[in-house]
Image 1 (spheres, rainbow, N blue to C red):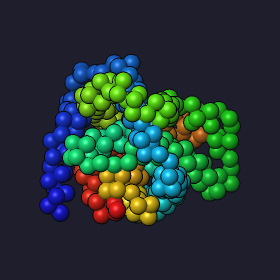
Image 2: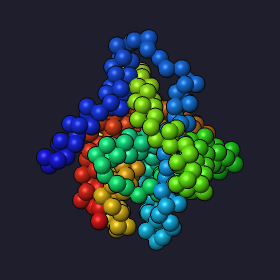
Image 3: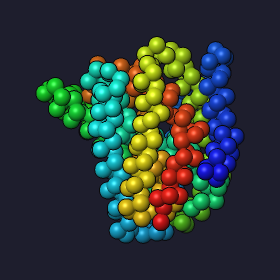
Image 4: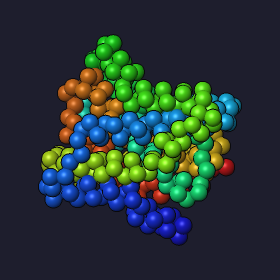
Length: 326
């Protein structure tokens, strides 16, 4: 317990977390601080590129084996399963309408790449090694949750969601974040350590500074969203935004134990299972479930779960990883 408290304290005082807090506080104070949308998008693309490329290099160095395949399969299974648990909790305890509950559930089955990036930064700072191929797992965990949400809607009311049309699946497959993350992973895999040596000054050294600037923007976005939609967040919904990541994280830790990941790799799989999407899934929900309210699903994923994971969640998931890791 002492180690986790020490790690939590260090994480709360880490530059990325403090920059997020600065943006959040500035938004609530109605400061005119703003990061241009084009800059924010460029920062996001950089983080996805750097994470994906380094993950591909790690696979090139490690090689393909049964543990890698089992890790990928466990990620897909977690992404498909977690929405059903989230949906059941939401319907039982929050009173959300069916469509809203399904949309929220999709967010919690999918993943936040930025939370993943923050976790890798914490692990690196703590000198904890991890399997680089968890990046590939992250990419594969985007889509199954969306499919599960559409099945929930169809099964509950007997009607097709808009997800049966090709536009939705094209939106998912060609979502910019998935394309960059997966493409950079493949390029890193092809070029290997030699490729990393050529561009290390770009993908390694600036990473934490870019993460700080991106999280400053995320703090601004999260603060604005919370300020505008606070009336929609009841006490049961707020509690869900804290409890559901812990449930997902526990499932991720159990999967990591079964697969046999290292403590660092287990911490990352736990983090992925505990995170909630606020980029890819909202875009898909706009097409598949247009009647679902963004003021609910974005406020929960970005306004509650993301800050919780960034500050207190990651140290908890590292503790889970230490327990589950082989």
